[in-house]
Structure formats: C-alpha cells, structure tokens
Length: 207
Image 1 (tube, rainbow, N blue to C red):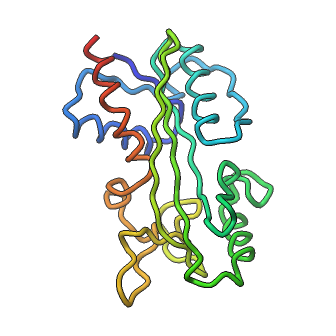
Image 2 (image 1 turned 180 degrees about the vertical axis):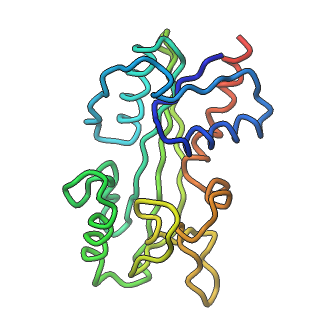
Image 3 (image 1 turned 45 degrees about the horizontal axis):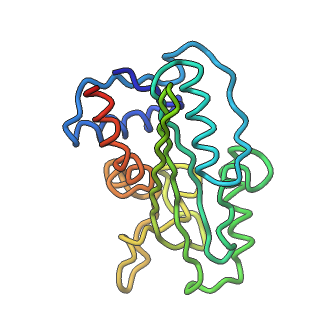
C-alpha cells in the first residue's frame, strides 16, 4: 500500500516508519510530498489543530488518490489560555522565525512564576482515504517552560520546553532541545498520535 505523508520533513516520515516497524506493519510504502505530483498547498485556516490536519490530509488524498496522513502541531501554554496553539509557528508575526517566537513568548511570561509555567506540545494527526474515510488522533506532551533558551537540538519551542519526564526533584531537567532524537521520538506528542493511527493503517494495508 502506498501511504502519502503530506510533508517533506524527513523526520516525520522516519518517525512514522519506526512506529509501523515497531507495530510489525509491513507492506506500506511512505510517499512524501516530493514523491507525488505537485498539487496546490491548502490554506491552513482552521481554528484547531484537528481542522488544519484534516485540511492537509483531505487535500493530499483528493490530489493523489492515496491514503494520506497529515499532522498539525504546536505549543499550548496554560497561562495564555492555550495559546500560541495553532498560531505557534507565526506567534511573532512571521512564519517560522523560531527565535522571534521564543523571544516573544519569554517576554509575555516574564512575570509568571515557575509554578504557573505549565505547557504542552500538542499534535493532531489525521488519516484520510480517497473514499472519504477519516480518522483523527491527538497526542500531548506535558511539561513546563524555562526562562531562557537551553539546548541546540530540535526546533521551534524545544529550547524552552522541559518535558514532564525530565522534571527531576531538585533539578530543572533537560529541555527538549537537549534530548537525543531517539529520546524525543519515544516521548513526543506526534509519536503518541501516530501510534494511535497505526492499527487503522495496518487494516488498510491488509485490505
């Protein structure tokens, strides 16, 4: 079975491949955006992560005729009532400027005490088949936010985010940007969401 992953991010494809392999699912060929004919990039104007994931997955399935998986993810901050949320990548006004996004978030939380700096990375993954069947799964990665950037791995808000698993007694713990790729894969919000879709992918592969 050919499975279109509506992304050109090799990390996302590799993560899904590892999850399928771990679940013993074979016979699935993953196709990135670069592996299928060009199609118009849909406008991600949804109000929720699920909205945007479905927008991308529906567009991919309609354009390619393949079962398509797409995700939308971001950071939700408790003190900001769940923002930046779907605006995470363009929180500072310019899409994809990680440093500006982090600097703005730090400024907004400057007076917030450590006890109220809870946050979570959220990922919603959508699977859409050409006949219109849809599945949606959500993964959450809880933690708290630091007061300065720490670590050189990862991207986005990783240098500010300390996972709950790293919240050690008497220590800050490592930021997401200090974890290895394997460590992050084992804990991440996207991995949790993709794992929930694995049984559906297995059923489609057997059909």
